Amino acid sequence: MDFEKIAKQLAHPSGAFGIEVALGMNKMNKFISKTTYELLQVSNADRVLEIGPGNGKFIKDILNSGNNIYYTGIDISETMIAEAKKINDNLIKAGYVDLILTDVEKMPFLEEAFNKICTANTIYFWQNPSAVLKEVYRTLTKDGLFVISFRPYIKGQSLDFSEYGFTEYKSEDVEAIIHQTEFKIIEKREQIESPIEFNGQIHNLTSQYYLLQKNYC
Ligand SMILES: C[S@@+](CC[C@H](N)C(=O)[O-])C[C@H]1O[C@@H](n2cnc3c(N)ncnc32)[C@H](O)[C@@H]1O
Image 1 (cartoon, rainbow, N blue to C red):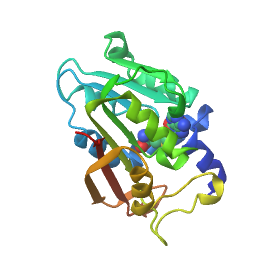
Image 2: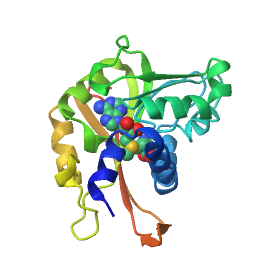
Image 3: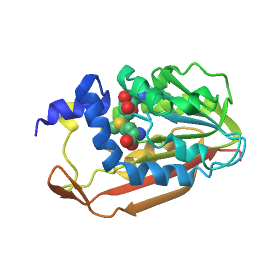
Image 4: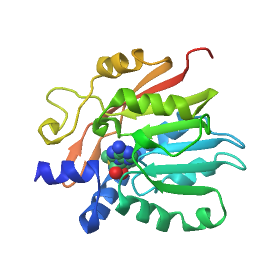
């Protein structure tokens, strides 16, 4: 397996290979994406922001959680924004979904624009995690909820992408970053996922979820 090529695509899917890698992510990350959405407790009239939805295959699940839900997805990859627009064409035309090409560190949104924010499997690529959390804090309403999920680094189990621009985190690393911000952790979950077959191999994956709120909630 060409680790370097795959790591680059996971960070920033592009071109035909990026589209293919995103389909693989849909399979490998279905559980973590859907669990993240469930924990976000989306309901009627919520304004939801997702950071790094990839091809946006599961966006419809968020919209199906209630009525008058408005979803915005931001991604740094032109290829992923184009794919997500194709897959969610009807929801965009209906005015419920907006997809924007931007870096999470420079989000073009007003303060408190969203009351629900989530991200799955993007923390590994953040250049400056404190700056990202500051941006999320700025754009989240006072009583809003932020769910961040990732696959924690487990020695001997995780694929080692660290030499290729990935930062792999253990829960204590993520908690240390959160503790530098004004967010408080309201819940932490760990899920041992069902074994999943991919490329002829069985993967045993663990995922972690942090539910965060502003400190004065
Ligand atoms: C590993 S994929 C995860 C996709 C999806 N959330 C999932 O779990 O299958 C990471 C996604 O985050 C996007 N991304 C990486 N760095 C980003 C940044 N700085 N700002 C916005 N999106 C970013 C990538 O382009 C990619 O679509």
